[in-house]
Image (cartoon, rainbow over all chains, first blue to last red; front, side, top):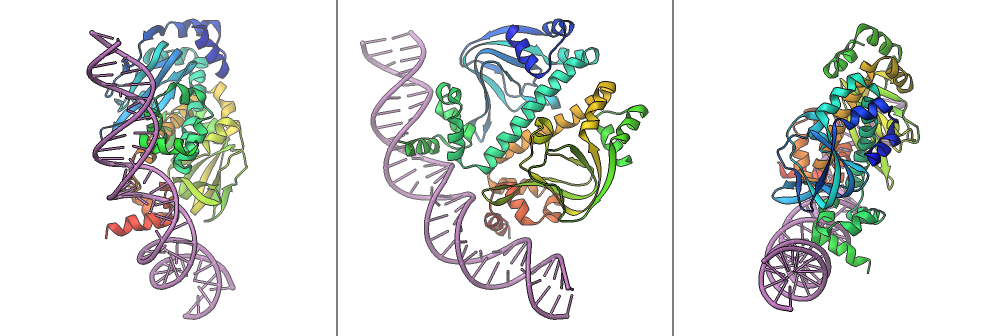
Length: 187
Length: 187
DNA sequence: CGATTCCTTTTACAAATGTTAAATAATCAC
DNA sequence: GTGATTATTTAACATTTGTAAAAGGAATCG
């Protein structure tokens, strides 16, 4: 749990009592590559913190597998739109590299909010940061060309080196063929 | 202020004391069409609630004016990425129809959070809903064609009827010419 | 190790969107 | 109202991206 609390401290430090309460709504899980952590149609009730490994959020558009998000070590992965609305998610979470995660039970977590305003604030700040990230992602998708977006991704070696190109292509909003063409230009 | 409190009540009802405190950080302003409410480079410190009128958030990409967001009556308009990060915004807010707004001073608002956890929760829920909206917008941009997005916009008559097409085009992520072609198909 | 499957690239062609410029149409300011 | 400005449409052509099919590489499983 140390990595998780270190992560929390970046946003809003917690008191020992709050940490104890937080630990009470968490459990550690181990997952294998390829595994579907949460399937399509399932309502999100868990926030995952990745201690090691890689995962992605994906869904199907007209039968094609589309990756929406990648998450690596020391980051959360959540299907926010389902967690916040309580509606079943159209997206799934899949493990891309064997992973160790902390599963945070959202319903129990939310019950802590009344007793520990610090915890409510912590998650408010975490999700605000995620919100800003989503806005930047949206700008990048809407207003940059596929090539510009690929160039930007090169600054995240993790993604380029650890993720199959077919997932990167759909993440960039283009086809595998198109990504292959873009890569060929730089050689 | 009644419209504003009615808006708040949809998310999380407030006590009379909290309402009084909220009223203390608000003031009503009147704006003319064309006016720049907040310029590019300015750090967002105000949340606006639109009582009447229309506004947009826009910025420049390679010299072209790009609309990111439209807001109508009974909605907030904020440059979230600047409000949450404290960084100067690359975006501006412009009035598209004469407007009456409630300006909420963000710094003073945030100071109320410690005294009124209800207010913190209110704005947490408001911004969570905005976050979900942003995720849906992102999905729509990435995974639907321009024509599909235009068809979806037709379900928002406000946007089609009250906003110049050139702004709608950049909002859809296409050129004016391209939008004009799409519209011509349906005639 | 060999066979199978999955991943990536390449090719040829089709479709969508961008660019530039010009023609209309609508709106605004005096 | 009238002239000037701004908004929208149309046309021709260029560029980008998609689609389908095939082939070469890499990874995986028994």
